[in-house]
Each structure stands twice: as structure tokens, then as C-alpha cells.
Length: 155
Image (cartoon, rainbow, N blue to C red; front, side, top):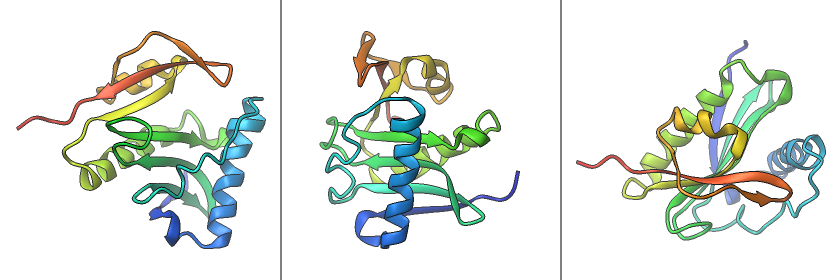
């Protein structure tokens, strides 16, 4: 696997090409690959203090996650739009992406827990990062999901 280049930017820091590329990446995975028509542009991308964590390989996006401040999706901070290019899955990039997400969130919002709306089949993946299921399974855009919470470390 070639070296990944990581960038974490706020909406205002993205140029037109970066924004286009990340939206295309997300639509290709969440709408096309998962056959799930839904409103991809939900206004959360440009909320003040939302961060876009992007991994590039040879200048092409191969992994992405959206880091949301407390009070946007949940009272807690949250991770959303978590995705790895299909051609690179099962190579550990998802775990690296989650490590980077947790590292950034700890810097950005150290006093807040982290909540995710996880696709139910990824429960064990999130549990490996100390997230705990906090809801029953529910359908989100036709896909079973569960809410999971990672509590901040207590001193």
C-alpha cells in the first residue's frame, strides 16, 4: 500500500476541486455503491467547526470522515460519512482512518463524548475502538443502523 497523505480541513479551507472531489467520493459510496438515494448535502458540511478528514493516495481521495462538533447531530461530538474506497477495503485503512478521527476529535473537542450512527454490520469494528451500542437497531435510508457512544477518558 502506498503512503497516504492526510488533511483535516474546515469547509472554508476546501478549494472548489477538493470540495467537488470529496462530494463525488461520498456520493459514489453512499448513493451509488449502496444503492441508497438520500440527501447527501445536508448543511452539516459547512457548519462552523465541522472538519473534513481526507486521505489521499496519489492525489486521489481514498478515505474520508466528517467530524462534527457537539450540538450538530447529537449533544456529543460525532463522526459521520466514514468511508474507504472499495478497492482499498480490508487493508487496515478504515482502522487508520478511525485512529485519525479519534486523534482529531480529542484535539478539537476534548471534553466531549463521541457518538456515531453506525451501520449495524460494523458494530464489531466500532467496538474495537471502545464504542458501545446505545440504541436498538433502526433503519436510516433503508440500511440498519445503531447508535454507538465512546466516552471521553476520565481523569
